[in-house]
Length: 469
Image (tube, rainbow, N blue to C red; front, side, top):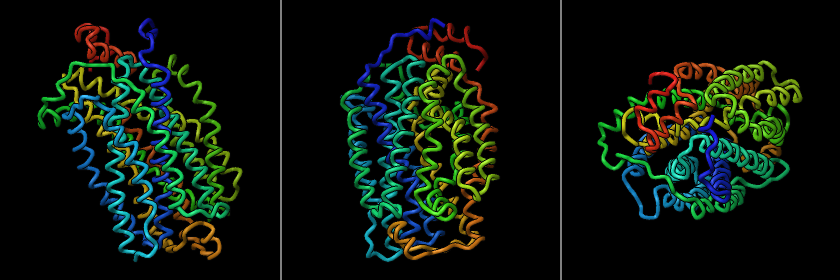
């Protein structure tokens, strides 16, 4: 218990700027994942073409994330390890977000698809530059795992705040009520992203210096590190399966419009999700003092799978039943979204402790790659929806869509509901399988971190571990 009573190594300004960055980054990611599919489908591009282009972009991700992970571990700037990269990201992420959502209207469908593919590749590249360093930064700000968990759990909630604000503002702007184009909406949000992401680059301090082999490991050692770090493999296998099958975000606006009469219903859905999450967030730090982080996460993930299936069974006949079930689901969902990326520092400590190689850049690159790989939920949702005879749409906003009165067949709407709820429920259940073999706990990770930082020896740590790793 005494290990938990550690004086904070970070200042208030650092933590606030760290959380502010996550809010801005969350806005960028949620705007792209939540609005991009709708934007493209309303540009008259065929479902199959959009889906194919998205998959092609992810093939680039397979190379770019790994490449940047290597660069991050090899390149050491005099001004810092993570901060120089973040100064690039704070400008480029907003700029590329604007470019992605401003496809010139005079282009033909093929040229529009090319614009999208190229701009999306560049957006993914700069997002990697924004993602890997910020998660590594927390390991450089403090060596205490309890403080890291607290900072990261609040950071995840800050990202959810960014997601909520983006969903509310962007949905209103492009809805029948707002009548803004997607391009104008992107410009407004990009300005906010820049203002929120900038402070951490100038306020945070990299004060933790660990003994590391990161400048000398070979490609063979890198592969051995990934192969030997079984908990990195198991956790991100869960993360990828659950994320790729979470297809409802790709079609949420269409669900609101076609089933409940208005795209603005999506904002009610966000409120129904946000209220339980907002009540839970202040209690998370207290909860984690009494419950092991992974145990809480696992049972919340299981509850998320079950409640998503309840939403599917609830159907689309009653808006209030739908909102009530979404609110119920948001309780375990809030825990999962708050904690899901707090496990990377844990597997980094395990990797260093078990192999002697501090390849944190590779671990965080896998996290970033996994985070972008799960956007394959969008093309997966489109592929499935395409099997149900979805009619192409050409409109600049939902106000235009309403004027044109474009309807969809019963078959298409059945496919829309399946993509929105049943596929995510099945995926969330299957994803639990690799988590059954994840055994790291808070007590053991703290011992490993202490050994890695040199405050105790590796033998002293092994003697106190709860199990043999």
